[in-house]
Image (cartoon, rainbow, N blue to C red; front, side, top):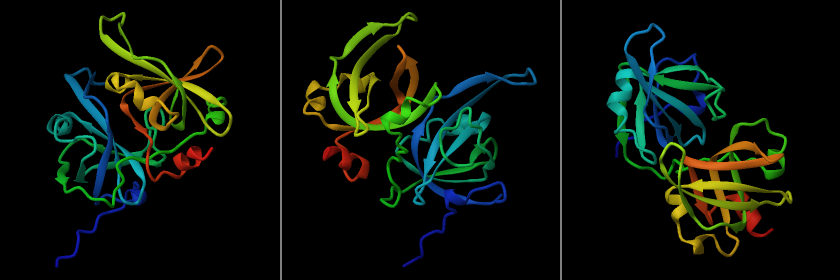
Length: 243
């Protein structure tokens, strides 16, 4: 039986390593965006994603230009890939929500291949902030939250000022710091049946956009985020189930 390929751990990536091959799951993928070149030339394009490997560490990766065009459809959230021939640079904290000191850039000659799924890599990685601590965080920011659903509103369909058809549902969660927050969920998540939110289930939110609202904090979970109702095998969720 052949030995499994040795992959470089994401946790060890740094500017000191120029040659590496990683295997990772895409936990989040952003939309393709266009922007004007600094030199005033033709429009360029970029999309970013977050990669998680079996070391349990997540890193942000950005694909520019030709690499963005080649991989915009190939890279899909939830799937595993092998990636090499990218550049490592210091993370830009203005755009990067991972805890990794570095981030990856793929702008030319990158080698990206879909890999077989593996149970060694989690499907999602949370970095929870308790609800009491939210009150002192500088906003706007992005956070992962876990709490018990204490109340929720029916899904509401409306048209935005830009003419877009939107669906929104507000969910109030609380945790064992005796603090609560309202999180707005959108689109297909908001359209889910009311019964899923009944019975005070524990819910996890990933990448909630936090802002100040009427002297407190409120959150919105957009398309790029994730939501898990009644998650299994999460210590934070199990603690709240007993609360």
